[in-house]
Length: 141
Image (cartoon, rainbow, N blue to C red; front, side):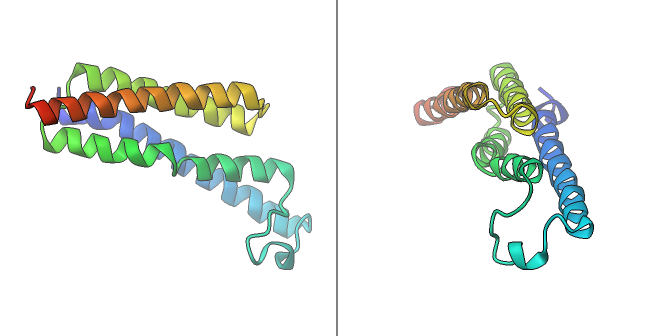
């Protein structure tokens, strides 16, 4: 597989993270300038933002949990030349789960649905890591 194909899911995950960051910046700016939040209420990271802003903030923060392991694995797959069709398909499933979870998180925020999407993504990521570790440890292609 080409390096572009292997990196595309990673780039899409980064785009999701950056989009949430920009959305959060706009929401927070609007909250402060409209007077909905006074800077002293949030100066020490107190969660005094409006609910909508908190939803986006938590979704953004969530992009630094499981995706970090995805980023590391993608780099290792490239370096060791183990990135193949299986990795490519699983990477896209993982990223789609991240998008779906972020969508639920920032809209209806149905915890059971959001949690299910998180678990599916986590299982896919675990499978990706197990496959990689087995291949490396056993010297498989």
